[in-house]
Image (cartoon, rainbow over all chains, first blue to last red):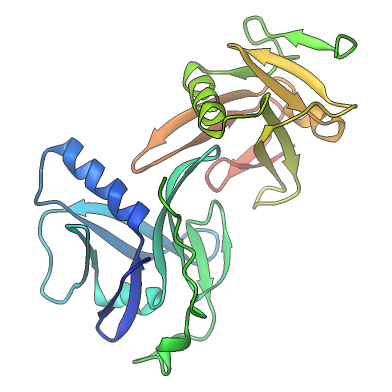
Length: 142
Length: 121
């Protein structure tokens, strides 16, 4: 099962497969201080796009999700677009990639790296415990 | 089976489908992991920002109207509707940043967009 960490009141799921892949990449880089940052920026064919980067330092205001010893960082302005999202890693015929399943995205395009949102979410979403409908769709690792 | 046209791909003429070493390795690895399958099915579908996008799958059998190619020991199957769009394509498998994916170099493509999986013909 996945663990949901409350980050600034918003649940964000860091799937096991994603954490395992990040751990592998960090081990390859031989720098255990690295953390994975997920962020949202303007751009792409749907208006917003996701970005990933490895960083050594976290900012004070970052939300952190720790899973299996790996830290995921999200800055506050990205977090408002990622509330309830799952960060996963898919490895199959079509390739290996990090994916973000985001309930805030009303449409996606390109290869899923760009998305658009509906009503802008201001402040705390209400009733966030019902957001994901219960079931997680994280990949089960083999 | 023996009636099926089997086209062996030499050095990437426009009438063939060619896999790079990395693409062939990835397909073989996937086939091995899966434990069954006879090759790669390549198709196009209407989607994406340029009008068409590639779809890949592991093929379990040969369709009656499929054209078969072979490159680096990997069998590639193409349905008749997709055939005209994929002739001459070179399939690569590359690592970009954190991700790995197929890349298609298509002589028929007039423009590509997104992550290169969408193209206009």
